[in-house]
Image (cartoon, rainbow, N blue to C red; front, side, top):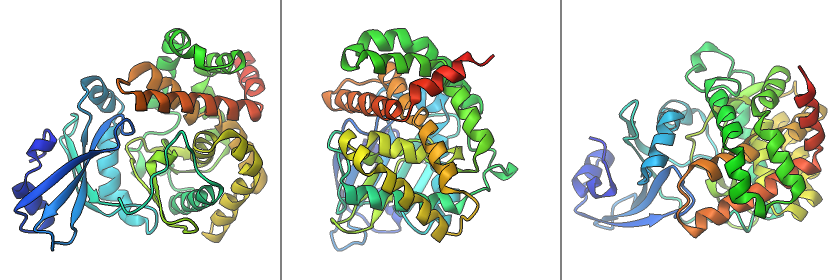
Length: 358
């Protein structure tokens, strides 16, 4: 049985899932304004001598528009299948999953996972510190290395590619929604940034095709931002990456540019990103990825600032329920940082060149 709401997550249901005798539980909603497609809860288990003492339960969003968006894009099914089939292949950077299930073709899903509340969450507005960015890019490189050069195999066709129907759908949606986006959010952007978004809204698929043709493919998170990561103590390399519902197949630079472009304050990014990109490449080498040069990575990283960050900012602003102030501020921060990162990396010229091609 898949719970419809958190009310259906009863002591009896969790007892069956975890193999424990749970007599009572205490539920706290967490991640308000962060999980736009899912509702997330911390559930404390009683009696308290059990291990685990608590778990995190993820259910679909209580907003119907958000639920339908998740179904249309196949994101709920992708996350459940990732945790059941691919997650066990990664030995770093993931929470322990106790249970993941979905009724295919619907928004009815549940994920019960390790409670990582002892780790630190960093707000998108605050952004990562230098040391947190270092730890994040290293974990990202280790995860990417597991499937490096393997994602063009037919066995992974169930994962959407960066040039497949889902991206075609998103590209058409971005073009359609730009006028409303400009009207609603243009006041938060410079004229240069708004012009970038207009060019981008017509060329998302074109950017993806260029990168997909020239770069090795791996498994990509595609929503790789700081609020989908949890960090250990300052100075620790411990990072957990969560929220794998948007996975795709394509170049790894997508995740790297998305992370550094949107999850670090702009001046800090400008000061350190060259070193962070080098650290990512060094970690790939350590993990056995030997055929991808630092030159190729830097070129891909430059163009990848015209991928996920801009798309997510626009798509979220234009299509999801942002009824709380926390969610609105999150989108504004993403819009501004990703636009500036793309501009810093010659994004307008790159888009104009693409736009001029027949």
